[in-house]
Image (cartoon, rainbow, N blue to C red):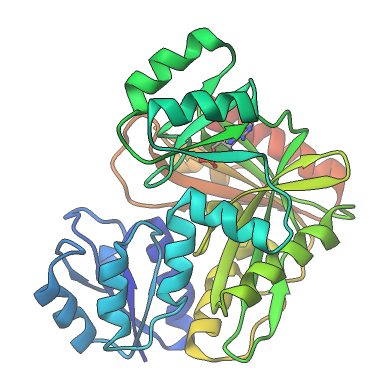
Length: 363
Ligand code: AMP
């Protein structure tokens, strides 16, 4: 079976690494010459808008998926007309536009921060009186890792934010004084079987995920799973979906979905019975899903900007190093490590060493 992946970044690379033991082969389509999944399969190097390259890509594969949620919808539809493509383009459409996403959550009775569409300065003024301050102004499209957004603490912040972001389709949301950020990684098979991993608690710095810890005995687990299942079913979704929430007391407010495998699920490679990558491939290929149960205790730390030398990470007992083969660059995710242990005290001690290393080398 030859699987086509739109996008050839680290998520594509880890999908391929999970897929080879199952006998799959991979073809990637990505415009970047140095795309880090490239050594793991054939690489069609072309823009997502290049129809002859897309046709060439389709000719080489049995089915397709994507690892990048900003694949243009037209490219996904082009592929879907020629080969099975999962998740279906409608999931991509829902995840690409923050307004469509929040409207979907609301229609499914999933709580969200209050929000309004903002296309003009007048709509921003009207939105501010509706949503109040503090608030967050975000681009509706192409935002990731906190890019394309501005927090408005006071009225003096409004002009600079509008000068930076105005002129494109925007959304204004109330600022949520959350206690924690949690994500739910969920997977749905072609036959409708749905499974969720334990919710993950995520810590960001400068808008980039730094630390992800799967939760045990999480009181919000059932609620997170319930919301994730509503979205999976509404979209007739096939594959892994990541759902990000703000936790406030006993409530979860939906922030966003990513219709793909996700950084907050990397711990599942060593920390779950079947990883998010393998489960995504199982789902899109029509195989039965694997167990999403945790195996022991684990936590994941990202290496951003610069990665620590391999010998310093591997010297930590229970640490599993993943380097993506990318050139160092400030704020770029270059790799991660997952640390595993059998008991809490050991996990904390190992994690403390790993976090210190990641911080020392981050750029
Ligand atoms: P996003 O791109 O929507 O995931 O936002 C990136 C990060 O900005 C989130 O992980 C939060 O830490 C923060 N953030 C986004 N939206 C809000 C909000 N409405 N209230 C508070 N913090 C937010």
